[in-house]
Length: 293
Image 1: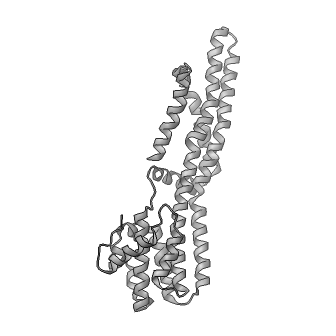
Image 2: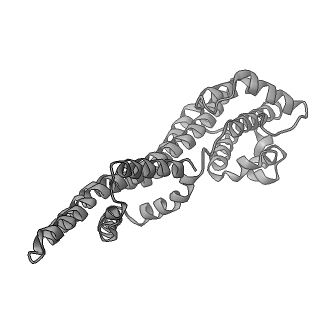
Image 3: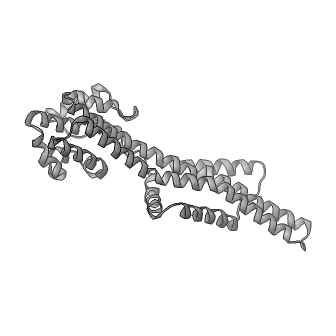
């Protein structure tokens, strides 16, 4: 919802300032110029992207209205789940995790964290590499390289909508100039009009430049930045899982392994050492499996 709040602030600031100097709001209402600017911008976006890129952008737009997907509570849950999995593997062997990772929804370990189970991307990433660890045929360096390739591929694909929106935002000021020039041509081509009538036509034409710049930097470009921000959140979670599993592969005990993962999280979502330790202790002693506040 912050993006909607930002839009309200942009509109309120621009129109409020315009009204303060006595501007007439009706002069800014130029639907024809909006059609030119937005139509040309969307057309350029379609021409610059393939079907996959267009589809990915359409799918990601509704997700921009929500806040952070990975709160501090989710991160505590993830670290606790990783601890329980690694502790079980250390106590009973890696093969003891086979049933858990094959059917996470039916696993007593996974089912205690329904929000994580519903996150297909993170669940697939976690279970796939646990499956490789169970096989025992790959060392830590090979798994790390494979993880890096997967994270890089995910980031590249997930940022395609951001690149498309950024390019569209960059094009809108130019299309605003196109709309303005067309308006000026229309005004100057109306030679039969009185000078008093040509003036408003010129003013209306200049609205095109205003709209192009406003739409670009006030509305479309922030969407691109928001997409990148959400992608970075997911990448950071994947990196946290990565360093936790690698620490375990390198021989560290589960408590130290999840400390590696905790340190990889953003500071805004990272639980303190004591918070995570207390939560893990409560789960081990039969306490609630829900994230600590």
